[in-house]
Image 1 (cartoon, rainbow, N blue to C red):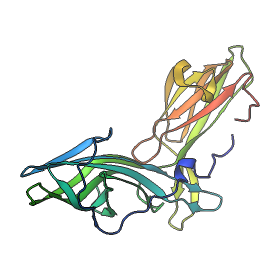
Image 2 (tube, helix red, strand yellow; image 1 turned 135 degrees about the horizontal axis):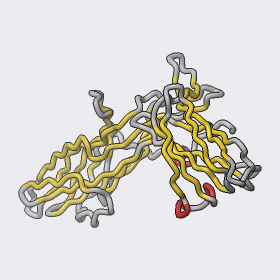
Image 3 (tube, rainbow, N blue to C red; image 1 turned 45 degrees about the vertical axis):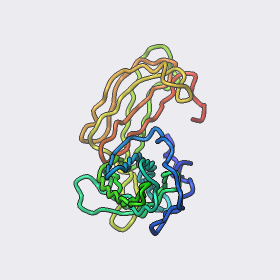
Length: 283
């Protein structure tokens, strides 16, 4: 079984969206923002005839790197903001998106502006040494709305948990099966261990064995290229203290699927073991 690829996936190679660094005055005469997209509503603020609604969604990332070169890749989180308003024209917006680890005290702040439709979004780079765990994504802003009578209402919104995202260490399942070409029902033992990316104090990267958790075994004759319509669950395997899980199955012409469930620090991961005619496919 070969080592997992250490190159970044395409989602992590996407170009970063530039972040605004100062407040932006919107063009005079701006009409109310269009209807909000399918983004969760997180706040509604009302002030003397004007209303501002805030919608937000976010996503996390994996901590990953190249163990051969000790290159630790940046971690990112992505967010989208959809601001809506009624009762006036949006004249100004000044805000930041916040990121705070659950249980931690440090708050990261990133300036954000919205366009004339009230939309904003970015992919934010974080250091690869960031602590894994769950992070609260929030938004703080002041929005000025001018009513038809000329009065300006200022809406102040402070949401510290619009979304919760996970930032976890990359993992992979190393596994093998006895009698890999057999299909006659004879006993075949599946053995393996889960590895997690480890970052030493001096910056060295390595794969360390995970000594707890659960690996779920299932199978699918179509393997990893089809949907899970034919996926058949077999059993759960608890990872013991020595880190090596093992179970016996009946040899069949099929793909065995090993799913590590992960936890708040280690990412979920899947590996496939071919048996029978699937040998030699190079997968």
